[in-house]
Image (cartoon, rainbow, N blue to C red; front, top):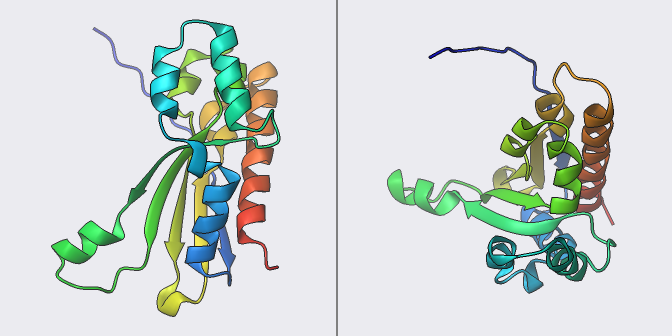
Length: 173
């Protein structure tokens, strides 16, 4: 048996907005086509061909109009409020979002990239419902740490797509 340790620096990105957290979450759900995501993971698990997978993805992303699909959401405020017998925790959600067509562009260069895709974003309400914070770790700092070439290029593209999504859901109207 052998053990290898590799240290690298991860970049954490935080967007703060005055847009209420409920609106940020609603925009995120819409951007990810959450309303039409029922059964999506099961479709991915049961897929038997590239064509079937691509058809599912194109249907969920409106033929590429959306970069990401809704994979899952974990809400933390409910159990935290129950555990600590309080009602002071604001909305706290971790969203998993992704697109296998984007993921494969990185995984084919380095299978360990699969550990970091699909990406996650953290959404938390500010005190007194005065807006929200959206936080994520920059995918390229995880996927392509210390790497160059096509993997780095693909991870940088993922960074840009994720930033575009976060800007869209946090923008003032």
